[in-house]
Structure formats: C-alpha cells, structure tokens
Amino acid sequence: MSTLEQMRAELQELNLQILDLMNQRAALSKAIGEVKRKQGTNKFDPEFERHMLNQIAEHNKGPFEDSTVQHLFKQIFKACLDLQQDSSKKLLLVSRKKKAEDTVVQIGDVKVGVAGQPLMIAGPCSVESLEQVREVAKALKAQGIGILRGGAYKPRTSPYDFQGLGVEGLEILRQVGDEFGLKVISEIVNPSDIEMATKYVDVIQIGARNMQNFELLKAAGRVNTPVLLKRGLSATIEEFIYAAEYILSNGNTNVMLCERGIRTYEKATRNTLDISAVPILKQETHLPVFVDVTHSTGRRDLLLPTARAAVAIGADGVMVEVHPDPETALSDAKQQLSIPQFNEFMSELRATKLSQI
Ligand code: PEP
Ligand code: MN
Image (tube, rainbow, N blue to C red; front, top):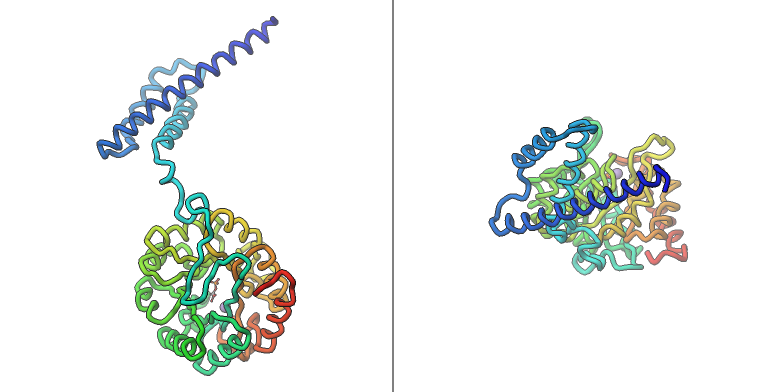
C-alpha cells in the first residue's frame, strides 16, 4: 500500500468513528428530548448550548480555528434538536404531506377544488354602483357563472385614487348576489372588519398587498367564511404557503390560493404570471388554486391565453375583471373586459378542449 493509500484508509476509518460518535450523540440527544417532554421543559436550552460551545473552544487544540469547530458543532446541535421535534408537528397544516386529498371548499352549494371542474370568478374591479354590479351579474348569470367579485375596499397605490365604497359596496354586492343567486367575494383590508364582512360576503378576499398582514390573516382564520388568499407582489411560494398556514392554524380550513403575478424586471405585462406556481402549490398544498389573469397581465389581449394556460396546468379556477363600461371604470380601466368581450372570452375559453369551465 502506498503512503497515500494508507493515509486515505486512515481518513475513512476516522470518518466512520466520527459518524459513530455523531449517531451516539443523536441517540442521547433524543433520549434527553424524551425526558424533557415528560418534564414539560423547553427542548432548546440556550445557556447549556453556550456552555458546550465554550467548552469546545477551551479544549480545541487545532489546527481548526475555534470559530470553525464551533460552527461545525452548532450544525450537529441543530440536527440533534431537529430530531427531538415530533416529526408530525413539523408538517404544515396546508401541506400535502399532512393531508393527501384535495381540499374542496364549499361556498354554499358551490364546490371549489373538485379535480377537472375549474370555476370562474368574475366581476368588476370595484363596486361603483348598484346598476353597474347588476349589469355584470346579469352577464355572469347568463354564462352560468356562480361567483361574483367586486372590490369595496380598494388598496390603491395612490391615496388620491378611488378607495372603494366600503360597507355600502358590500351591501350592493350582497343585494345583487341575492337577487341573481350568485355567491359574492370581496377584499377586506382591516382585521377589525372581518367579522362584519362575514355578514355580507360568501368569500373574503385577502389581497396581494396584505398577504403578510399577519393580524388580518389571523382574524380571517378565526371565522369560518372561505378565504381567497392572493400571492403577495414579491412573495416567494414559501412565503405564500406560510401566509395560508396563518389562516389554517387559527382554525379556518376553507382557504383558496390565488396566483396573481409577481413583480419582476419585465415591463411587457403589469406583473409576471408565475404559471408554474400553480402545479407547485398543488403539489405542496391540498388547497384549491386560482389564477387571476387580470392583475397578473394587466392586458386585455392576454386574458384568454393565460386563462387557457391556467386551466391546462391544473388551476381550480380563474379570476377575471368585467365592467359594463371599462373606459369609465374607477379602477383598472385598462384591463377590465366589457360585457361583450367577456362573453367572447368565455366562449373562446370553453371552446378549448381542455376546459370544462
Ligand atoms: C383585486 O383583486 O381587486 C386586487 C386588488 O388584486 P391584487 O390584490 O391581486 O392586486
Ligand atoms: Mn383590479
């Protein structure tokens, strides 16, 4: 055996010794975790960890720097602590691993999240008047669409832009919903309005700008009304999933997710539709997933192709904005569909073989 080979053999022997010691340490750490669980004491003890790290530095003879060995040991400590956690507790309530079957959200008699049965949510960006909402509702009814949207509290970029009609808007939406037998959805921006909103809407929308408004998420979690949670403007999928977890962990399991485009450097569209988020969210969670084609593209000419893509990729529904006279709309005038355009959009989308919508 050459010297190099001999040294390598020794190295491997040392690896195995380290491995054995690490696993002995892990087993001991697990046993400690069990004792602590029975005592009801905290698993992580920062004082003891500090003591161990100091002891390691004191006994370190090199050639490693103290900081290097401390870093390596810290990784071992962390891995041991992770072992102490109950593995089922580590799973998020929203995760597919926790619940394998699809969640079907029941909005009255409307079921959301049934495989192969995508739904459409349509309506004006903002509720502006009773007549305006009625006209849109009539068009929805004629198309056999069951869920009417309309913003009453508008989170506008500029404080000088139309802010929505507030409660009056919710009243209009409810009145029209009842008149036409439609379920209604509207965005709520203030945690203290959640309770009140449940009296008017069938679905509470939490908008992109509020995806990480944790008090709002918690308040929405404390009621039973279904919630449509939109992805934040610059939120990662992980952050989006955690935001949904806030709602579920507070008790409300009727949650639907909505991809609505994210902010990128691309200027051709208002936002960049992250279409791959749909199958990722479907794999990672058991919740229904929608695609809002209006806010993700900001372009009328892209509504149909993106809606087709959404259905083809497995979305549980599509959201689109419709206004009787988009040019005069108080918000999002540029991308809302007129009623004839909406009818055209629906028939084109339905003509797509893939779509049952
Ligand atoms: C909306 O749907 O009315 C809206 C404001 O969308 P987002 O929160 O996705 O911007
Ligand atoms: Mn809008």
